[in-house]
Amino acid sequence: MANILELQNTATQVRRDIVRMTNAVNSGHPGGSLGCTEFMTALFFNVMEHDPANFSMDGKGSDMFFMSNGHITPVLYSVMARCGYFPVEELKTFRVFGTRLQGHPSTEHGLPGIRMASGSLGQGLSVAIGAAIAKKMDNDNKIVYTLHGDGELEEGQIWEAAMYAGAKGVDNLIATVDYNRQQIDGTTDEVLSLGDLKKKWEAFDWQVVEVENGNDMQQMLDAFATAKSLTGKGKPVVILMKTEMGYGVDFMQGTNKYHGVAPSNDELERALAQLKETLGDY
Image (cartoon, rainbow, N blue to C red; front, side, top):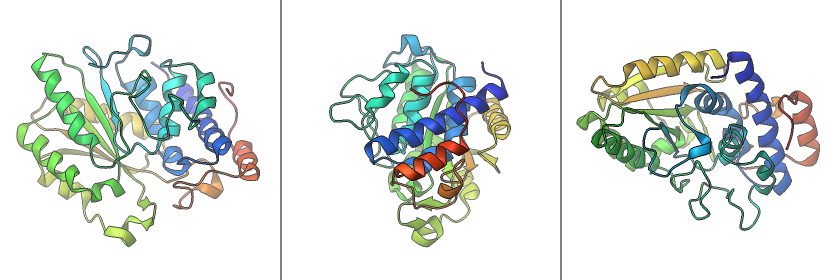
């Protein structure tokens, strides 16, 4: 289990991976990836009980993670590689034709760590609920985690799944919402206001953990600890995590401009100058 300094150093390297991967192919989604870096680093290197060297699709005896907002694969692939699911060198193949590292997660090529194709937004919570129920049936006490974008909550299937999990007491599930208030066409308020998210999830009989700054590693660790302490008590748990899209690179931060736009060569150099190489570039 990594300490907080190690986690912070890993997060910085992950951000370098994100901007380099997207720049190399002039495509991908760096904004949300940068914003979720603390969450993903804490989850994979400190929180989840998993064995990257012995990955299995059924996930028996292991915590499981499903990324519903599958467009932010740059951060997913970076943390997966950095913790040992596949060689770090393979990050060079991001979005290259025929690669295992597709733009959205794909099960076609059997990439270790990926259990569902995602990015068709709204589906991940339903899959995670199914996995959590399967664990209960198998008397497996591990936890299922899932991540969603706040814009993704505009999908009706999310709320059908939320209603089901609350009504059926799926209490080995921790969902997280990346509450950055940005989506591809503007702010969430401009596109479709989310209203009071805490009250909405509570109305569906979920326990809610709020994180004021999801780009603060200690706050993320504390939120995970609280969320885990609430599992097994008859209700699913959701973390509402406020982040900034593009966090860590000043000109990409707090705007939806880089939701799905890769940094240019000049922008890459500016970004890398702000991100110290800590674990070694691929």
